[in-house]
Structures are given as C-alpha cells and as structure tokens.
Length: 434
Image 1 (spheres, one colour):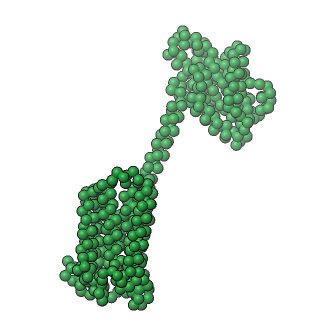
Image 2 (cartoon, helix red, strand yellow; image 1 turned 90 degrees about the vertical axis):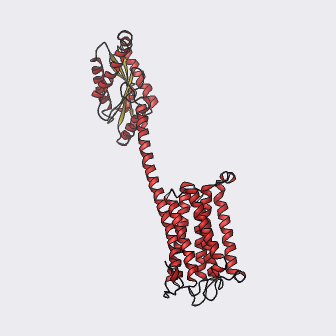
Image 3 (tube, rainbow, N blue to C red; image 1 turned 60 degrees about the horizontal axis):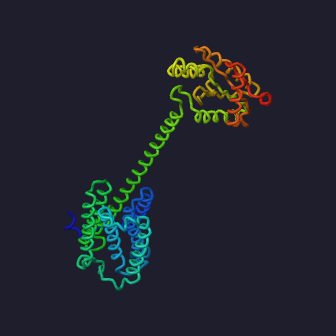
C-alpha cells in the first residue's frame, strides 16, 4: 500500500536515526547473548548460525552508526566515505539473511563430517565471523573508493539498478523457502524466524522504492528493520523463558524423583515382614540419633535382642507361626519404646534397639526398657522369650561395630545365665558412663 508514496519525502526528524540505530544495535547484541546462553544450555549447534549473524549485524550496525554523516559530527561521518553507510546497510541485511539460511540448511541437511566434529563448529564459526567482519570493514571503511557506487547525492536507486537490492531479495526469499522446506514452520521459533525474514524483505523493498534518505519508504524501511530485530529478540526471550521453565520443571521433577527414590530405598531397607528398619537403615537412623545426643551431651544405649525358643516354634508349629511371632515381637517393641527410640531387625530372630538419655540415667533407662521388652515378649506365648545384651557408651565416643559386638557378647551372657533376661556389658563401661 505504501509503495506508491514510498518516494515522497517525509519530515526531517533528527532524533529518529540515532534512536533507530541504537535500538537495533542493542536488540542484536541482546539476541547474540541470548542465543549463546541458549546454546550453552541445549548444545544445539544450529542456533549458533543465527547467533553469528546477529553478532555480525550488531558490529556492522555500530560501524554504520559511526560512519553516518551528522551522527556525531555535523555533516561528517567518523569513518569511511560517501558509499560506506549504504554498503554497510547491504552487509548487515545480507549477513542476517545468510545466517537464517544457514540455520535452515543445517535443519534440513547435516553432512556426516560436520556431525562428527560438532564440538569444533563454535570455533569454526568464530573464525569465519571474525574473518567476515575484517574483510567487510576493510572493504567499506578503507577501500570504499573502489566499491561500486550505490548512492548518488543522497539517492540510492542504484541499489536496485546495480542488482544489489534484487540480490538481497533473492537471498532473503531463499532463506524463507529453505526454512519452510526444512521445518514446515511447525515450531513457534520457525514461524517467528519467518516473520523476521518477511520484515527484512519489506525493509528491502520499501527502501528501494523510497530511493532517498528521509523519504516515506526510507522511514518505513527503518521501521521494518527494527521490527525484524525486535521479532528476533522476542523469539529468543521466549525461547530462554521456555528453557528456564523447562529447567525449573526438570529440577522439580528431579527433586520429586529423588524423594521417591529415597522413599523406595528406605522401603527396600525396611524388613518386609515386621516393617522395622533393616541393619543398614537402622545404623543410619541410629547415627542420626547419636549425633543429636552428641549435641545435647547424652549417652547411648544399644540393646541386642535374640529370641529364645524361636527355633522350636519354627520346627514344631511351622514357619507361618514363626512369622506371626516375629510380627508380634516387632509390635511389642513398638509398644515399649519411646518415640525417640529406634528399633530394627538385623537377622532371622535378632532385633536391636537404640536409645539416648542423660549419662547419669542411661543405665536405668536402658534396663527399664529391656525389662519391659522381656515381659512383653514373654506374653506372646508358645514358650517364646528373649535374651537382651546392653552396651552403654557416651554419644561422642560411640563406635557402632564395637557397640554391637559388646551388646552381642552381653546377650550371650544373658543366655548362659538362663535366658529371658538382660545383661549389661562390662562393669568398667558402666562405671565410665555413669
């Protein structure tokens, strides 16, 4: 709709060009940063093509800003000559379109030699971009006099007649076509890349139709270029947001899976029959209890319980009855112990209990608990009973292997003394704790 009036001169707005140039440069710098961050998170090498194009465009736009007459010094540009800015305009359009074209090609076809050297692609791209920037800047800043003329006294219809403008149109259209062929525009990213290409295409067409600076076509072309940069920026803001959301979701899922795994591991380490912790889990829980006792300067009692008469029950009443007895013993332990005490099953008919109490009360507490256990187990019937060995130790000096061995020795001493009783290990240890 604007093509018929594209060559009409618009108002002279001195602030427009610096504002446009600054916004576009900032957009491409941010895009480059976001794409690099996206690559680090996903290792998708094809993203680097667009990142390289954005970086190239940002540098070219900065140099173009410096070369614009009147941008910093009235009537004069800081770099190059009369043809520099128009050639820089061509280069950043071509570089950006080429980067999207390479992205599309990489999505469509990836040669085997490239697939086997993916880790080197970033280094290759850096080298190519630096070489392209060096060659481009030397051409338009140092050797600008040797370049074909694209602007004549503010008129750039030569962009069209020289073939440079049509070349940009073909390059941009090719990028669009191959992007569609490679992706089918199935993802949001691909759709918005196409929108960015359309904006670039419109910039090229309306700029060529405008023919001179500050024409309506020129203003609209600058707006289209800014729209293209903004679209790319929004694409990657969205992509980074999606990566962030996925990372948060994955972290939550990982935490949930870890929690479930811990529960399952605990379940695996629980005795299926009695529901009491097995040896490894018991020692882990007992260590936690011991650590709390260390903080409060308490002592630890370890009770080793072995059932009396259990073999007779298995041999004469059957293993089913034996299983019932084990379950009833576990229930008896739970009914006797305090909430802070820990019980576990460490063998066929062997149980352990860990409890803490102040050092002066640990012996009395442990023997009272042992006495209640002996009574409750005896009440199960069928001649079942238990012998208990007790080991006492200060929490900070406790060694589990040693304490289990001492409690085991005390348990056998109780059996030798007649069974269905408890014995405390070692008078010297008792005196030390008490």
